[in-house]
Length: 108
Ligand code: HEC
Image 1 (cartoon, rainbow, N blue to C red):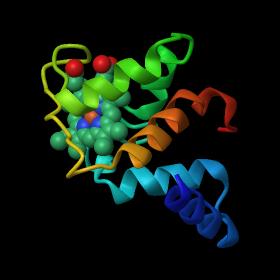
Image 2 (cartoon, rainbow, N blue to C red; image 1 turned 135 degrees about the vertical axis):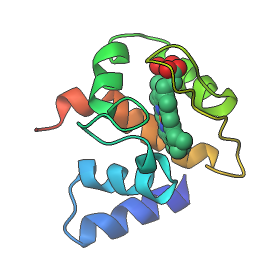
Image 3 (cartoon, rainbow, N blue to C red; image 1 turned 180 degrees about the horizontal axis):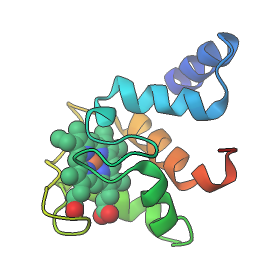
Image 4 (cartoon, protein in one colour; image 1 turned 180 degrees about the vertical axis):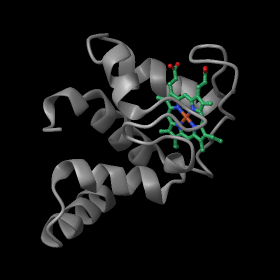
């Protein structure tokens, strides 16, 4: 958690808002090669993921499990490969998913 806070603080100092800070975290972890904020790439745009799950109480736990073990047949034909802790740390994954689940609260 400490590392995440320091990274976020660092980005905040560079003038990035909270939305950009977590986009940067998704980018750092390679998620943005398949997920954009608004455009469909191989994976669904993060705003659509937000629309689907933001109101689900178990969304964070569910989506963490999906990224860890991979996902298929929810959004289309392309599957998402599993991302273990060697690819994305627990702290980073949780921060990215919390950001995705709060996107509807962020300005466009
Ligand atoms: C190689 C491309 C690729 C990468 C890299 C990738 N994803 Fe995905 N992701 C997908 C695809 C394709 C789907 C849709 C899978 C499906 O239909 O079930 C998906 C689905 C998802 C979903 C929705 C799952 C559901 O059950 O609705 C989340 C959340 C997600 N990805 C987060 C992430 C995060 C966070 C990262 C970075 C750690 C990441 N993805 C990296 C391709 C990718």
